[in-house]
Amino acid sequence: LTECGPGVLIDGKPVGCDVRINCFPASELGELLVKSPSAGAFVGKESRLTGEGFLKTGDVGIEKDGKIAVVGRSDELIKTRAGIWSTLAVLSNSAKEHCGLTFCVLSAKAEGDKYHCIAVAERAREKELQAFLMRHLPLPVDIEIFPLNSRVRETLEASAHKSTGGALLALSS
Image 1 (cartoon, rainbow, N blue to C red):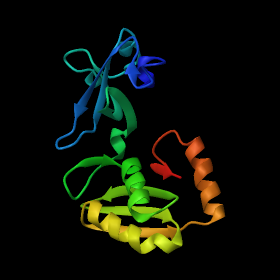
Image 2 (image 1 turned 180 degrees about the vertical axis):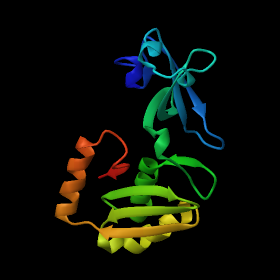
Image 3 (image 1 turned 120 degrees about the vertical axis):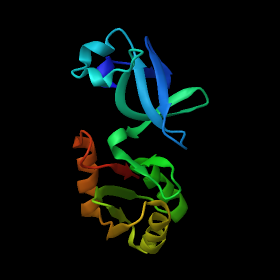
Image 4 (image 1 turned 135 degrees about the vertical axis):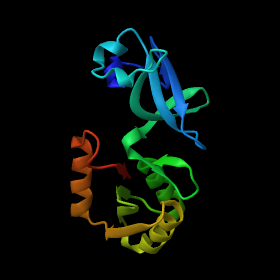
């Protein structure tokens, strides 16, 4: 949303602009579209503007109770086995809830027709996490789970603070 200037959403409400969510098929999630006087000034490619003058931000959002929440970026989207579009952050939070985890990091990448997923979580919950990911990630998928220790946690938390999007896709604690 930074392409549109500061303060596009405050407390989940648009400020000085019009915001729409272009929902993905069979999902409550969608790409945020913003129309504001400053939106066009930050755009280098006309293809990012819709015919109605809305900027395709690349941010993924959801609307609940009249408020818009940004939940990720469109390049982080993954289509689950149920055919629902989600972000790795949403899957990470769901995994924490369903597997009783206090910490979970997910990273996934399509390699040809196969997904490769790397997860970091508490060792005691590895089997539950493996089963959860097999139920939700698209098949075929390779899953590697690494045990969490204090050094790994510190490294991941530092990376999350430095990340500008891409290297670390989902960090939950």
